[in-house]
Image (cartoon, rainbow, N blue to C red; front, top):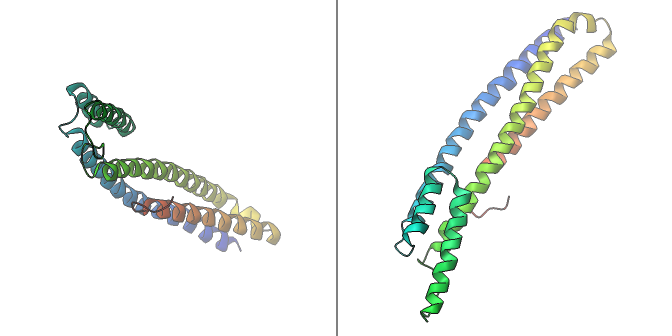
Length: 186
């Protein structure tokens, strides 16, 4: 039973660490995609010719700092002012500065939400992985003592199984949230 415990806990530590490393690389590529979407869509909206110089400046400063929530707030304030101006000028028709305004601002909001959710899930996975690896490493030196009592040995093995299951669960949760496409429910 002692060898079983040694092999199990060394394998657990190596496997979940490697799996997390692969998962983190995948998630970083997703972050790059989300950053590109945010930059392109918000840059287009900020560049529309219907905003005042101050409004454009506020939006571009938010974009340059990577603060896309501030950009959305500035863009929505600018849209509100633009609509008021159009109403005061008695201009009829839909009061939006461009035809795909709603689609672009919705995409920016979607990318912000997915990025925030993915960061939160990545940190959860990191902590569960860290606890699992540390628990496995701590279990290795006491394996020879625990192996003397079959009940304790089986209990320790089941704890190892539960830790791995927790890691796999958080990894699946992270992947599922990261792969959400525009328009899909959270």
